[in-house]
Every structure is written in C-alpha cells, then in structure tokens.
Amino acid sequence: MSDFAEPDVSELDLESDLAFEVELFKGYAGRRLKAAIALVTLWVITALLHSVAWGHGLGLLFAGLLSIQALRVMFAKPLAVPQQLPSSQTDDSVQLTAQELSEWPYVSLLVAAKNEERVIGKLIESLLHIDYPAARYDLWIIDDYSTDQTPQILDDLARRYPRLQVVHRGPEAVGGKSGALNLVWPKTQADILAVFDADAHVPGDLLRHVVPLFDPALGYAKVGAVQVRKAIANVRTNFWTRGQKAEMALDSYMQERRIAVGGIGELRGNGQFVRRSALAQCGGWNEETITDDLDLTIQLHLQQWDIGLLFTPAVEEEGVTSALSLWHQRNRWAEGGFQRYLDYWRQLAQNRLGWRKSIDMASFWVIQYMMPAVALPDVAIALARHRLPIFGPVTALTVAMSGIGMFTTLRRAEQTSIFSAAIQTVRGTLYMLHWVLVIATMAMRISVRPKRLKWVKTIHGDS
Image (cartoon, helix red, strand yellow):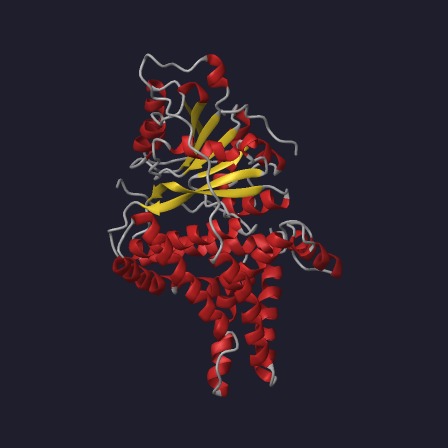
C-alpha cells in the first residue's frame, strides 16, 4: 500500500429584541424557537396552498421537481470500492517488514460503554483479534460511569491484554457519548479513528476493507469519513427487528446512490471511521447535540470533506425488540437529525456545501422531515374541504422510492428470492409508517419543550 500521507487541506430567555436576535442567529442557542418558527411556517404554507385554486397545481409541480432528483438517485450506479488490503494473518514464513508495517495506517478503535456487562467482553475479544497488524492498531474503551459490572470486566481484560486501553469517567463527566470520545481521541496516535457500539458484531477483515477508502494515492484524498453498512443481528426476534432490517437496507441504498450523484453521505454511529485530520478540523465530536454522528456528518461536509459507504462487509448490531424502545430510540434519532438543520441553517443557506450537496440535502429534508411534519394539517384540511391532500404526490414518490430501495438492497445483501424480498419490502413499508408519527410529534414537542442533553442508552442483550 502507498504511503498514507494526509492531504492538505441551551435555551435563552427572550427579554428583548436583542435577546431574540441572539437566540435565533447564534450557535446552538434558540433551538426551540427556531423549531417553532419552522413548524409554524410549514403549517401556514400548507393552509395557504389549500386556500388558493392553484395550490394543487403547485403541489404537483413541487413533486415533479423532486422526482427529478429522486430519479437521479435511483438510477445512480454505486461507486466502485478499492481492493482490500492483504491479510496480516500469514504463516510464519511470511512476515511483514518494518517498512511494510509503516505503510499500514494506524487505526484506533473507540468504544464508549455504559452498563454493557452483557456484551462488552465479547466485543473486546473480537476487536483484539481482527485481521490487521497488531502493531498498527489499538483499542480504547471508555467506561462512562457504569453502575453494573462493566468497570470490573474492563479492568480484568486490561490486565490480560496490554493493547487494551481502559478509561473510566466519573459522575461529574459531561457531554454524553461525544464527551467520552473527546476524552480519548486526542491521546491516540491514530491516522484513522473507528467508533463502534458495545453490541457491535465486527467482521474480522473489516479494517482491511475500510482503510483503502482513505488512501490519497487511490483517489480518496477528500474522504474524511467512511460509514460501514449496518445490519441487524437479532433479526428473527419479532416484527420490530425484521422491520429494522428493511430500514437498514433502505438507508444503505439511499446512501450509496446519494454519494454516487455527489450528494450527502452520512455517519450512523456504529461502524464509523473518521480521518484524524478531518476530525481535528471539526474540533472533535460536538458535545451540544444528542446525535454525535449526524452532527459530525454536517461538520465534515461543511469543511468540504466527503463521506463514503462500505457495503460489504457489514457491521451488525442488536435491533430494539419492543415498540416502546423503538419509539424512544427513533425519537432521539429524529430530534438529532432535525437539530442539525436548526444549528447549521446559516451555513446551509449560504450554500457552504456546494450546489450538488445542498440540493441533495434539501431534497431529503423534504422527504424525511417536511412531509411528516405537514401530514396532519394537510390531511385534516383536505378532509374538511373534501379534496385531496396537497402533498399527496410527494408522499407517493416517497413510498415508491422506499419500496424500490428496500427490495433492491435486500436482494443484493442476502441473494434472496424475488418473492422473499417482496414480502420483506411490504412488511418494511408498513413498519416505516412509524416514522410519520415520530417526526410529526417530535417537531411539535421540540417547539414547546426544552431538551436536556443526556446519553440515553439502549439496553443490549447478549445475542
């Protein structure tokens, strides 16, 4: 492999007009006010469109314009990936020289763990035996003030494995997962930092597939991060885990093709790899957000980095197994995703991303956030006036894209039959309807209630 050289490259009270200006236009402040303004604006526009004769025509025109971007995405060919690095687990007669070893990028694996006694030991054992030169990677586990047996398990493993670095955080620690990661990454010597959740199932050859995607000599000088496709480990448990499987398939389909047309690649937390210089340029992970991965996504793109996606192999994780757990988790994801538009609206409005990424991000904001947010008033007014919803064509376009994406990726990832993929797609489409309720209620809730930043962990089993 070529030399791995880095390329150059709270809520405020409204007491006066000045306070209003500060809250609306400065940093992370004023999220509640900005959310309220955005929601009311969308509702007013929806009502106005219903009140004029040409409202439905404008809705059709809007859907037509959006379909142009949708077709570009759906017909895009996923980018080719480079050949994986050779295995480091050779026989004793073939040893890597010091020079050869120095050409392998140094990777630091980071895991922030809180009360993970059921799964943390298994993850550490797998990460310490991956197929990558032992001298070119290390493992850091941050115990975020666990109250179960996690600290003792980590300390026992650290005594057995010198390459395992364990850092304990106390009750005074702040910043959630972002704060835990920020405590450690400056101490590493990594060229690339990888982040995994405690319940991750990591393929042994994963690093050999991911690392070439950062090599400037192979044309990846602008890649600041790579997200590995996520899959569900406990997919057979029930309807909810099977639905999450289809959801992950849809997400990877959209990501691959959005990247292929020059759009936005996004990080998903578990299985994310970040170039050290890119992370430093962003100032580390943002401790003022509830979804560190989505926030870092925007920061990287604003700094003119790209984010890639590795389709194979995938990183598996446990899907939540109950409707209540799914509701809480998806509400956090939805709020964090919407939050970044509120935090970075000025930079986005100034086209700091460039036209291709700005158009892509705006298009998917419409699908992911605008449509669920206006669904209630749109349908209510349509029923009252005995007319069709204004945004019905956009909804139909969204459902069609979702179905095609699920079906295509399920067939590709599993090599399953057309019938099986079709059944899973129908089930996945029904499952995805929960996002309408999640987004709609989230948009209203954050407009009236302040959010207390905290790490709300998902309870993991030992599957």
